[in-house]
Amino acid sequence: MPDTNTLSSTASMSERADALEDKMARDLDLIVIKSRLHMWAEGDLGPSPNAGLLKRDNPNATVMMGDDPRLPKMPEKPTLVDFFRHRFGPAMHLLQSAHHARKNGLPEKLVLACLLHDIAVVGFIRGDHGYWGAQLIEPYVDEEVTWAIRAHQVLRFYPDESVGYEYPAAYVALFGEDYKVDPYIEEDYKRMRNHKWYMSSRLITMNDIYSFDPNLHVELDEFVDIIGRNFRQPEQGLGYDNSPTAHMWRAMIRPSKYL
Ligand SMILES: [Fe+2]
Ligand SMILES: [Fe+2]
Image: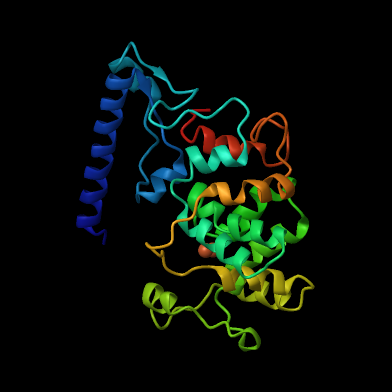
């Protein structure tokens, strides 16, 4: 039997969303339609908002195909630094991890790996963030960097006594005592454990600062040189260089583009 509470809260949620969309159309002269993924994230399985109906109710509005005025404007040829400044928010966790990596004397490319290890969390999709993050930057960095970033989310779940890495206490608190990783993580761990770059990824987990330290403020400027030497910034800008992941960068530039 369906849970009526769930049904009614779903209905009111989508009603609220419709009202908000309607208001945005009136205020911005723009009709903004979210991707299905964003709707599911709200537990909303209802039909996609009907752009035609919204247009009929707001005849002066157009469906958003360009920049979203609610977000900072990106330069025409965005660099990685522009994404940090205009999209990723404070990203202090990444800056702190990279700062520690540098202080611990890691090679530059692994400092970069620490700086970008959670790029999917701050800029794209959280679940499987190591895989998404690695894919995003694959065309622009050394293979070892992407391998290490992809693997860090898997290795984070597995202790390694030889380097003093323990299962994070934060995970016990966040996921519960009985949490078990998904089988594909288990499979990937077996593959990753014996890989030649295992330790590069392990070093990310060791410099992955578990909790935000309010007393340590780190500026992105500290890493601009390292980015310059280790991230192949495309001349045309991220998103417009025809790389296999350019569309993913464009999704961060215009996350609610209609088509
Ligand atoms: Fe991570
Ligand atoms: Fe992290």
